[in-house]
Length: 358
Image (cartoon, rainbow, N blue to C red; front, top):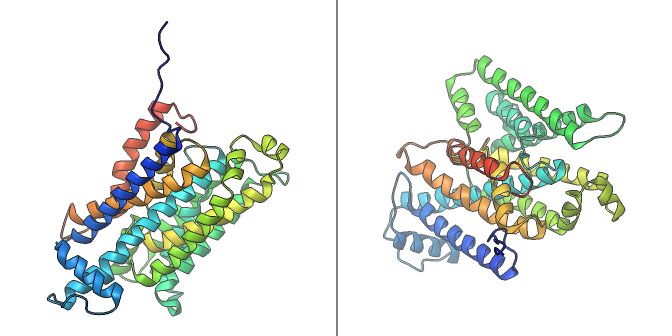
């Protein structure tokens, strides 16, 4: 009698799961180091170490033998950009997990409810018309958040039939809202008469860019991401039950309506903030949760930390590629993420036949 074949994935033993997370953490650290070194200006590791040490210790531990421009590149440009890339990748991944749990659809991501397109429309309107100029660099963040809120409110309104919203109705409404806000965004860009610079900025931003990364923006994005991550992790068991269906969730005492509303609020808030600092970056929230789920399983208590590591690492690596592949120019990071994400996702779909959890 032939022995039953066993598959390595998903990882069953806790020790194997911890090893996987440790390996991803090591890859992340290595990616951070390479991202600091590589770019249009290539820097030496020893110099990077000395600049960072002096800045962190707030005193001259090492005598400064480098120029002020070099220190600016390392501390004020590359370091905040690297951390922003991680937060954006991890945040989009977390939003993808929430959307997939909400809709019970492995193909769902922040785009599925029109949230990303709504945030994009809000941010582009600020870029093009400057009506929140009094907020300075935070105007785009506020515009993106307002757009995200409007898009999800519209999607929920369209999907509500007889005071009830189903996952299928919400997905269909999201597709319609995405198309609507995408059209609004394109209309604003096409008919703007304020000069080509704003049009170029909007177009580049729509393809995803981390050029505007700064310590101030990173601070607010990190706070929002950390709060959302903790809240979702605490409710991870509720997400597990939600995947079994509303009827099962109700029988075990889960308030599905309240949980779904909470998921929508968190996803809207986080997506709005992420889009405001990075533009539109596709496929991260769609592919990373699916890939990680096939490795560590569907339990959210394991899936969330692992996915956050994988998603953050993926975008840090994607940012490195975007900065070096056409140096000294820069390729929009959304192009890089789509280039790798789309083919790999199609491969996963063919391999798993679209089954949730791979």
